[in-house]
Image (cartoon, rainbow, N blue to C red; front, side):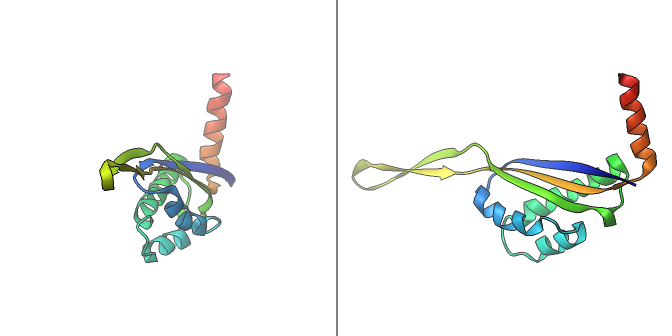
Length: 130
């Protein structure tokens, strides 16, 4: 069995990156089943989009690499800041205070074992292109 990394991305999530990182850091190094339980039990708002992203990554791994769900683990999660939406709130004496509505980009990397047949096919295709 060959080990393969699979990625899934979530971009422009309308949530501050530091709020998402709190949950994302809990998932690193856990099996997919443990990560799903962790996210389902969490009361944080960031749990729902992270769970959806994790399930998308699992579906990608099953469909694209024919990997078994029990062998998948969360290798790495990166939560970066996206573009900031600037809004203004009126204050006393004609002033205005800026409000920064932050967004996040999340990259989830899974690692798992792939059946040899699929790995061999990809190797053959790469050799044919050269």
